[in-house]
Length: 296
Length: 339
Ligand SMILES: Cc1cc2nc3c(=O)[nH]c(=O)nc-3n(C[C@H](O)[C@H](O)[C@H](O)COP(=O)(O)OP(=O)(O)OC[C@H]3O[C@@H](n4cnc5c(N)ncnc54)[C@H](O)[C@@H]3O)c2cc1C
Image 1 (cartoon, rainbow over the protein chains, first blue to last red):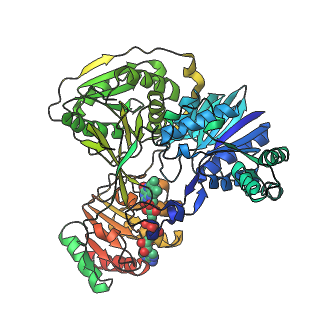
Image 2 (cartoon, protein in one colour):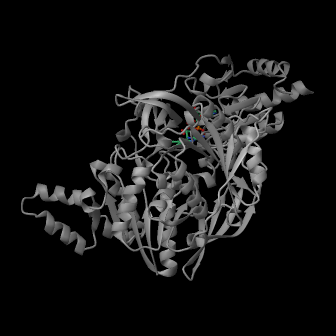
Image 3 (cartoon, chains in turn orange, green):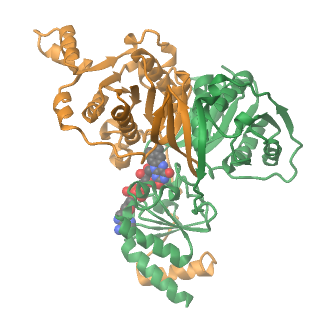
């Protein structure tokens, strides 16, 4: 029996950025971008679910993000996760990877006992691959990054196949352990129809607040208890639920790295020799390349 | 938190007793940064029987070496390495620490940044030293960590104004390698290795290398295809052209993600950086992350039906047209001319 916590992130779909998403001042209008489940995190969840199937235990998912990230948490429940945590607070806004890993590590300590922490190798909006190892360091855990497969678990030791530069490596690591999972490790399972029917009604604290506000007969506390009992509550943690958190270490203020400048790229522009897409045009281009000894 | 030291450190990654190219490239860059700061460049070498590597780093500009040589460090493992690096950085508080953005560097650097509460920026495409005014405060000689950001055509300059140690990772091939003609004799400071019970939490059972036959970096001619090729089948056009003119095949990330071409052939900020004599960019829009990996090529030929595609702005020759039309014509005419 192993308990896993999977760190997941909802990311803007950077592959679908169009010109219109850029504001006139050159910044990105995030609200215009479709938000998707970061794929490597989904593969991390799949690996955790496989561990649960083979050895028993539980899988919890945790994300730090805005309220709308609960959409992704529900997807995790549809795939088979047992419990979901939304770590959300305006005070977290502007966190860099270090501040984010601090919040996540505090939340993981709050959630409690675990054998594995899983994460995707990196998120597509920044590609830094930093949050996993930074969280491991804060939790004083050892780590295996770029994992592709868990081959076996025996006597508190996990045998893992991982990618390294120019090849692969098999390592044996003692639990507890943080693992980051690399693209292509597995094919995440589709939603389970039964789970979908159940968990489509799952609610975060904010959802319930809204319901309570719209109906004066309902009391928020009772609603939360009701949803908890039905196992349909997406636990929402704010800084108030994490009393040990040091507020100077979170958000923009708690982030060592700051964005000093953002510039639209000014390209040198217009110097290309325009070659017509005709046989004559291409023929002339080839002559030039041959004459200049660039080809041939 | 002002940092008075003028030390620039480069973590030297080694595999099987050989330093990684990216570490030597970073020394060349680190030398320039140290000169601007009127400071010193130190290489940090961890491994077993690696004194020769420590000495070699002077050829690329290191003034001195921090060397930890011990059998436990023969192969990289996260805990002994990060533990020793944490200790060194906490004790010396160097102003700048650079790591290669390799699998090892991307596992190690974040742990060290996390432990030492340092700023860390991934995959920088340029590093400079400059005075900075940030939120009305003046900061002297900060490290500008420059990288393309967030999908679009933006370049972000990241700084670490208030923490003593500024860290960055850089991909292989991004910085240029300079071997010094007359390197100074290097001073090696040997630091004892202190074992710890956590060292064996991760054990390496087996390693196998699948030496990639792909050598994009060393190839004078590259034919790169993008998502605009539309299908893996159509991507054969790229292979045909490469074969005809004797080039290597490469791709954009969108082409890699779509399965048209293998990941080790991806050009760009998160792929390989190339500077060939000639590169064809076909069906590639020219996003900044892509351009970061090829814009210093000697000659760029872009083929794309969209005359507004940004790739044309860095191209030397632009052909507004479809790959399916242009490539077969190019191949046929080229073969004819060589006869
Ligand atoms: C953090 C981060 C890191 C990234 N790193 C990289 C990286 O290292 N490398 C990289 O490449 N990208 C990288 N990207 C992705 C990058 O932003 C672009 O999404 C990607 O380069 C687009 O690839 P593309 O040009 O092939 O596809 P698209 O942008 O979809 O462009 C396709 C082009 O094909 C043209 N076309 C259409 N039909 C045809 C035809 N019949 N014949 C010829 N042309 C045609 C279209 O006009 C268009 O210009 C990164 C993104 C992020 C967020």
